[in-house]
Image 1 (cartoon, helix red, strand yellow):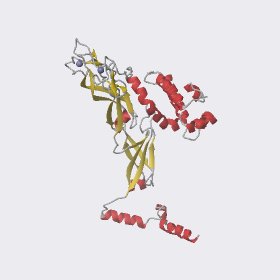
Image 2: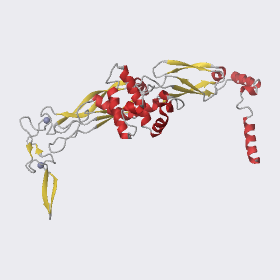
Image 3: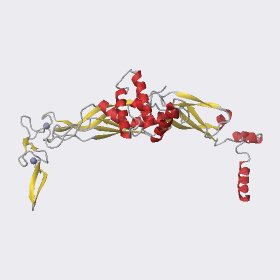
Image 4: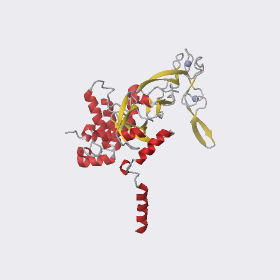
Length: 381
Ligand SMILES: [Zn+2]
Ligand SMILES: [Zn+2]
């Protein structure tokens, strides 16, 4: 007996979308395989949570579940596991960057209010392009990020060692000044200290009073196997250093996957087209296809194979993110008509034609006559 999806997520049956998402996020973080290495129970729980969330976040599926319970998804609709697999990956991508960021960084975030002169560093964006093979296998990427770090000379204060920033004499350290304008008295940001309330009378020689220095840092980023094109990975606190001791910004990695010469991807499934010679298609035979794992798989071509016939190699597609499962590889064949025939080949084919009967090509035999009849029948009625 499967547990109730609402109970699994610890929410009431009236829970709204927001409450549902936050409940799921909290539990997903708790049972995430990266936080529970080797704990198979946590892994199972993590997958169950994903399945529950997948159903409840979709209004249609949720309505079906409310009416029929788990039975709504047992038969038809592709079966529970198969049906949700693709969707599950996409909902994970939804919250993936959040989890990923919090797991990687764990550094405290928060914007510092003005006044102290501390400013949060900018977020950085890094565009990373990987191959389909890399998305298949997963990798650890070393990236060089141009960024700024806190100045070691002044510890980020911007003031020359031995001195310290002084309260701004113009605004008395408030950061705002009042000015009379006609009948009104208006308040505006202090022009002398740009609202910081402090001025550096003796700027640090190394950073020029900025409190930070440019640097290229090398970061190592874990790209999990099965990652989707367009995934955004947040590395909390790995962005630009804050100004004058403020907190660092975040680094966002925008991941894209290069188009592949042979394979097209749709979720976890891969598609590829393969030509088959006319003779192989007619007599039957086989071909060997190289898959993304570098191995070859033999595909049997049955006698009388037509263009458009699709072969399926189970489990030879892309891995599904952190699930241990994989999609399928579909190969669609196109029969290649021979070209540049020699005299001898031509003779053989002509001879072949002479001894052929309508059974050899039931599709084309009489096709145009049937087509003509069809249209004549239409004009009569
Ligand atoms: Zn001021
Ligand atoms: Zn400095």
